[in-house]
Length: 145
Image (cartoon, rainbow, N blue to C red; front, side, top):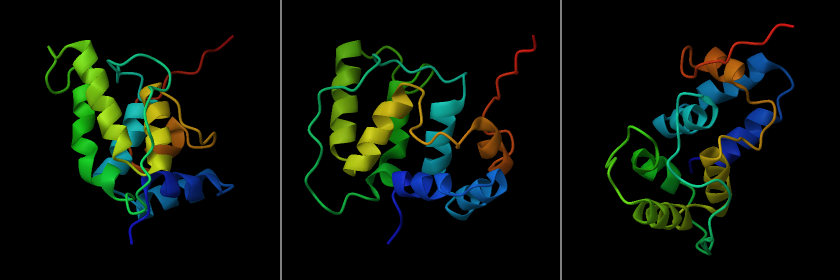
């Protein structure tokens, strides 16, 4: 059975060295994993949804681990420049709720955070992601004093 995206990221964050975290990401490489990392960490990605966790009911089904990987293409409905740019905001929000309600509960929580440009895994940074997948995310320049 394939690990869920949240399981891969949890495994990755347990590694102490950035190189080991990058290796875990490479070992579990999927288009969905790359999309989640890019949509959470790249400052060029702009979400068209309000901040905060929407009112949704997590699924009670036990076999939802692969749903985020399978349905990742739907994420383009929720970002600027993605599919259906003229969609009404309310319809977009309803579709997002339906999207996360079909996911593994941990992946649903993850998607709510990704939407807010956050990852609950502190040591998965843009630099670690780019070590695993060069050029995937734009790293913001460090400010010098």
